[in-house]
Structures are given as structure tokens and as C-alpha cells.
Image (cartoon, rainbow, N blue to C red; front, side, top):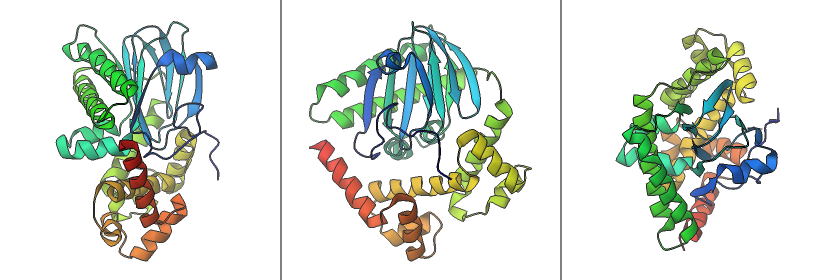
Length: 300
């Protein structure tokens, strides 16, 4: 069944490859004011977004959870999460969009515990006097400067600043209580539990029944829950996680296709290639070649 929820790079923009632009910066009103500050439900397949509300208020929808936020607030929306915003006309603040896979690869090397922060949506009401909150705006402004300069090392410097920003998000997450959900918290929590289980077990190629049993649900109930909240099936969630890991390894490692197939739970390289091509339209080798070419073009 084809999803009715739009997928964008940025809201209103045609979706492109997740490897062409590693990071992007803009101010919230630039994107939201043409839509009367009402950003309808959509997803970003390859990009994570970090919004910092410094003025105004709004309603935030992430998957099946709805929040009311007052500035100052920080919102983290990882890739492949359905989200929407309804802001007041007084809204202001920066928003950074960056490649999820690139950041996860960087985090895995320099701060492995940060990977779980990157994958979990967060809505945090901030105390402006917090020393961690005070560090946010200089980092956002540094990212804006790198985005606009177009100098040698732009991507390296910009993505390093995004990593530093995410470290502050992790620190704030440990200090602050998350903003209470307005409603539907149970379904959102179930989805997060399912995704956490998939993160742990996706390499084992477990059937959906196993995940459902561990959650105290039937497979049918779990699939209905995923369709209601994420607009995809439970198997789609597992397949997306496998593809996410496979694509990351294809781009950021030098392992062969057979090694990567084994890493994500495929004993047969040919079966892995068929699976990959079915979901991406490319063979693993074709994907690797195009992604690396895009990255090299961006650097030069």
C-alpha cells in the first residue's frame, strides 16, 4: 500500500538522495510562514532535524504523540518519523537538517552512546539559565555560518558542529524531563519500544511474531499500530532498519557486499542483492557508486 504521507528533504521540497547535502540551516519562519505556520504531517527518509524555538509557541506532532511547546524548547526529529508543526505567527528560532546516516557513523566512532539519542524523537522544554542551554545558540550560529560560507572543509566543519549540538541535546535529555504528551502517549510508547527492539534484533531476521510476542501483542495488532502511527507496516519498519544499516556500511566502510550482507543478517549475497534492489531500485554496488560519487562531488 502506497503511503499517503509526503516524504521530503525539507517541507515542500522534492525528496532527493540522502547523500547529496550533509547539512542545511534555516530559520523556522522562512519555511513555515508561506504555509501559514501550519506544517502538515510528513517524513524525511534520510534526514534528522533539530529545531530550537527561541520565541513563540506551537503544537508538535511526532508519530502518534502530540505536544504543546512554549519557547525556549528543543525538538529532535530523527529520520523516518512522521511529524507536523502548527506554530504561532510569533515563532522564531533556527532549524538544522542533516544526514542521519552520516551522523550515526560519526557518533559510532567518537561517542557510541550518542547513536541512541540520534534515533529517538525528543521534545524538551528548556531552562534558559542551564549551562547546556546556553551552549545551543552559539552552535546553531556556527552551523549557519558554515552553511553560508561555502569554503573548503564546509561539510567537515558543519557536521562537526552538528555533532557538538547533538552532544548538548544528549546532556539536556539527561537533565530535563521530556515535555508531556497531550494525548495518544501509549501508542507512541509502543512504537518506540518496537523500534528499540528492532534496533537490537534486526540482524537476526526475526519474524514479526517474535517482536509482537515480546511486546505482549499479536502480529496483527502490531502491524495495525504501525500503520496507524507511522503509515507503514511493522515489516516495513524492520526492512527500513536493515536498509539503513546496509546503506551506512556501503558508504562508510570498505567491506565487500558479501560481508555487509552477513552483517545485516543475510547468509546469501544474492538474496541480499534482490532485497536491496527491491527496496531501493539499485543493486548494492550501484548504490555505493552513486553515493560515493555524490559525496565526492559535494567535497570538491
